[in-house]
Structures are given as C-alpha cells and as structure tokens.
Image (cartoon, rainbow, N blue to C red; front, side, top):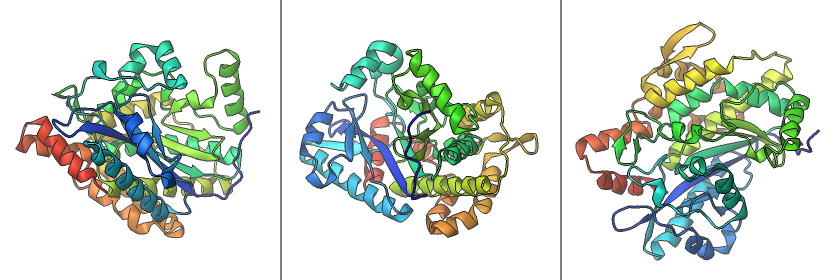
Length: 370
C-alpha cells in the first residue's frame, strides 16, 4: 500500500491561496511570477510558489495549531507578496476568475511539471486560468483520513456555493456564480471523488492508475477533496478563491469543524452512507449556477431545499465542534456569506452600479488587501 504520514497531531491546519498578478495600469494579468519569487523575503521561503501560469502565485501557510494562527500567517503572506508586487509596479488580487483576461495570452511557468502537464493535456491545461483556495486538516490514521474525505464529499456542493466568487469569464457575465467550476471540470480526475471506503481500497486504486501510466503519483488526482498521504492531511479543494481574507478564514473554520465532526463519527463506529456520485455532482452544478441563492438536494429528505437553509443547519450541527477547536468566532463569519455577501454576489452588485470590469477589478484589489 501507499506510504503515508497520517500520524498526527490531529487537527493542525494549513491553507493555500491562489492570487493573481496584475498590471497597475488597466488591471490586466502580468506575467511576473519569477520577478516576485526572486524578491520574496527569506522568512517566507517555501511559502510563496508558482502555479501553472506566470500571472499566478500561490501562498501557503505552514502547518498551524489552529485557525487563528493560520489566519495570522495568511495575513502576513498577503501583505508580504503585495508589498513585493507594488515595489515592482504590480498589484495582487484575490478572486476565482479574472473578469476579462484571455487564457490564450497567458504564459506557462518554466517548470518541468507544468511543461509536461501542458504537453499532455494541451488546450485543457492552457485554458485553466482559475484561482482557488485549498484547506488541509491533519488526520491521525489512514482509514480515518479516508473516512473524513468520504464524509466531506457529500458537503462539497454546499462548500462551493458558500465560496462562489467567479461570475465573470472572458469579459462576460456568465450567469453563473462560479464560472471557475466548469473551466476546471475539463481536467481529468477532478470534481466529486469516488467514495473510497478504506485506505486499502484508496491505495489499490491509486497504485493501479500509477502502474497503468495514467498518473505519476496521487497528487495528479485533483479531486475536490482528497487524502494527502505525504502531508498526513485531508485536503478540501472545492473553494473559489476568496477576495476578503476574513472569508478564507471562515471557510477554513468550517472545513476543520466538518473534519472534526467526521473524525468523531469514525471514532464512534458510525457507518457512512455512500451517496451516488451523480447526485452529489448534480448538486455541485446547482451550486456553481446559483450559489447560495439556489436550491440543493437534501439527501436525507429526498427533496430540494434552499442552500441557505442547508448551510444554517450545518452551522448548528458543527457548533460544538467549532467550540472544541476554538474557532467559534471564525465560523460565525459564514453568516455573512448567508446574507447576500458571497464574493460572486458582491461582484455582481458592483457591476450593476458600474458596468466597467476594470472598475470592478479596482474594487477587488482594494478588498484583497490583508
């Protein structure tokens, strides 16, 4: 079976954010990742990284003891990279898609993994001009990690709806709350993962793909939630990138509280229901289209309910978990996302006031400052 590091301590947390690099004049994307990487202060070494395209950078916390520490690290990282960018006449912004950029004009990062990826996937990879947030939660024990990932799987559409922050694509209002979702959907091994059940089954299926030459290793499985054996975490990857840092922190609190609840259910011997992938995926499409303003299928009741109702119920269920983890205040930030303040809705309101996407990007840049 695959080697792993699911050996604790449990419920440490790490967060990764993908930010866009902008020209100060006009707010178009700038191919300047290498210049920024070369100037990152030494204390942030290894925490600022390239992504597929030269107009994208990733910031990543170290493993943190709690949500508050993760928030402090993210704040420091956002400030540091923003300072480096501004010293070079550039800006940074946090959003799920750039409203008017064209993928055809982007340059691929000069790194072997990314060159090989574009060589293999071509158009599918070159159009991936999207920005997301990933939350890692440490879990003790490989079978428990698979159980937690399987448990979070059911909630992925709701997590997407809460984080929706990408209504614009290529200069158009898409009519979606998360246009990032269908763009990434073109990739293989993305979206709603299989229900694996046990570490043995997960290991067997990953090794089968590796033997067949489909993937080099498990990191080429880009599911919306996945075990990360090398880090010893369960990584939730479904989120659109948040503009306001406070919302990233609130979504991290929701994720770790949900992982804590699933871990407790595992410890109590509670079996998980294997919800059909097609039902979970149908919910995900609904979430991408309407965000928190639409309906999702409630599997327990067998009917559609408002996404807001489903989210409020989940917050109530996770209140004790958040209290035990010390992130009650951060979790309460989700309430603002339930009251018409998702990133997508804020973007659309701003565009209604002033239908100029460059003006919108000016607002996004300001709101992205830590």
